[in-house]
Image 1 (cartoon, rainbow, N blue to C red):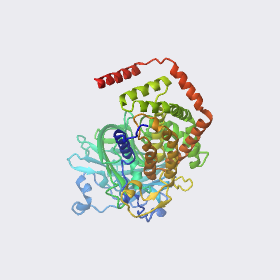
Image 2 (cartoon, helix red, strand yellow):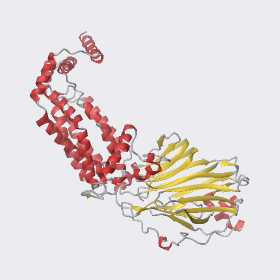
Image 3 (spheres, rainbow, N blue to C red):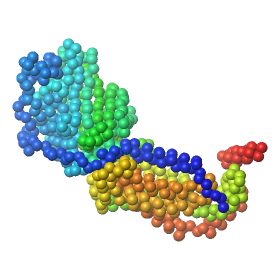
Length: 619
């Protein structure tokens, strides 16, 4: 018998595989603090909502008209109010809402200071806010004709709320006179998360310095919505679309910034919700940045990322005119697909390449169809069954290859004994045996490689599918997040860092299932693989990695792999005990040996190289 020595190259390979998987799963390694449930609930939802007037003007007193020509006085009104003789304006706000979206727009600056989703709540049952308590700002920066700077965030606008053809229209004007003003116009349609937004000026050609650019400055800090801020942060990202429909992204795990051209929209995604600024006519350039806040904000658990965009607006004839759109709503394919002309659906993280294609055009619509008829957890199980049945021919081919290798095991062992002192010759004779028998040792790997696109597509589908958000099944209260059967608050070194401060049951079940699956496949065939005496290590490594990494991932993904491995085990038992006949396989191999085998160019080249190596060794 050949002694099974420790193969250093195999161990190095396992370490590299383990390192790659760690990189894939822990690009944003969760901190112990990020896994604690210490965030204080927001004490109020909206104190003044009950006091809204019929006109939705929260403050009926209009602010005094300000003189835009005195830009320094406006920009510094707080510190210089006495010097210029202004009366402190009324900092009122205006509410713009429909049946799905609530916006509060400040009269000072004319920008949204609150954006609330009416039909969604966070993990702790607080309404979902995208903008609240000063986490977002929007304004225009431009130079006046006397080369002084003006920021519209310091201007006060007069609100006028009207109803036009069933749509609510809010016009906010900062005036120098009745015919000279800067206007922000918001138009909200019933049942829509998309709000038309127009910036225009009238009669300000003598004030705006056309030789210097007017820039739009949009900033937002992503508010935490999920029970694990580290998990949420993995899918919180700045995404943008070029004029040629190329989708690009800033880093999700570290600080990043880019200067880009021809931008059609910029999305500040906060996992399952997005704040998007889109336009009909692309922004010529844009300075975009994203700062990771999870580590530095870990004690307050408040925010995920700090986004910023600086975009130039074109001035024509001394006047501004730009049509844009605000989207404040769910990152849901059902909602975003309605805005096909703007391409907002592309902001959803389906994945890249073929993986994204599979998610977008196969799994997403397929699961949406199933979940419209069945409970969400049952829909996952049904989808799993159908996917495994579709992949059963691949499973059959893989197991057939393993059965052939098992039949050849005695002959391979004999060759190992015969050439135990000559590894090169043993390899040559083994390959000849494979060739004569019509068996390829790689044929069992090819089916596994074919399943990799499915694996990665599902790895992206379950954590980002809005359809799974806060949908329960059995003991899991949210299929888009991890399930919990036991948790603790004490920080345990290494365990808290890599595993977490909780125990999820679905990953445990999935790990057990994959262990038995690997025993049926890799386990029975490992000793027959020349040059790989330590492959049995994988049988224990893979379930262990699944147990560790999936503990903090979507429970829907663990449910899928648990059911998938159970079904695969069942299929393989049927193939082994009903379909395959080892005696027939053995007879077929013997027949193949008798047939002359014609070498292809690759096989001939490999044989010649091995013969040359053997001859060189003899010399």
